Image (cartoon, rainbow, N blue to C red; front, side, top):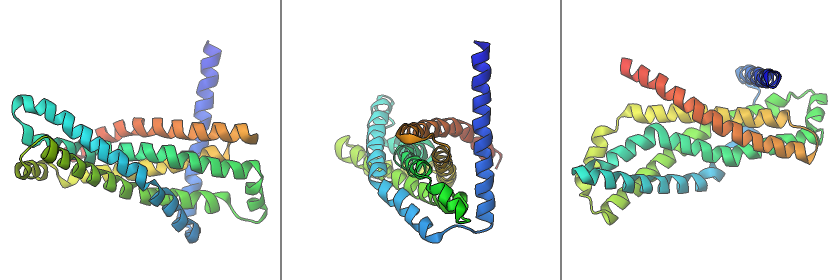
Length: 259
């Protein structure tokens, strides 16, 4: 048992070290502006535009169910008009960026790992090196920058659609007074809530791209290796997002309290 735990600990530490080295290479490449801008624009389209449908559906139905559930509880204590305020703060701080990141990790993280993994299996990455082209510059950096740009924008869409869908449910189905509902939402939702959500989305975008690229670059040979890399990219990115969200909430909550 101890031998297994020691081997597992060494494997985890080795993986973290390799990811840290890849992150260093990405940072150095970004400082030297070696990004291929055409690929960067295409990756924004692939990560951002193509992910809109799943993000918008997720945001809309999350806002609706959150609004309905909050109303059912608040109605017991005659606080119906505070329903949208709770929905707004929850979506801005937590649910908007987290659910957006999880949906994008399932769609984009798997795609990135599969694309780069297939290139590794077919020796296209080795061909890039023979042409004096660094794989980080050509493959990783455009995806990393595009994820950093696209995730905050997608999170904003998720938040806006979720609040709008919740507002429609509260006013049209649950019969809450719309004026007081909207006024309370504006009163209790602050700029810092939106800022926290955008910062989280920015960090989550980097996590998705970094893990997806790393799994693709280090995948095993053959179709089985690409399949394992794709699965691990989604699972590891999702777990990392949830864990990092907890620590980001604590740190940023403390920082906001000090300001």
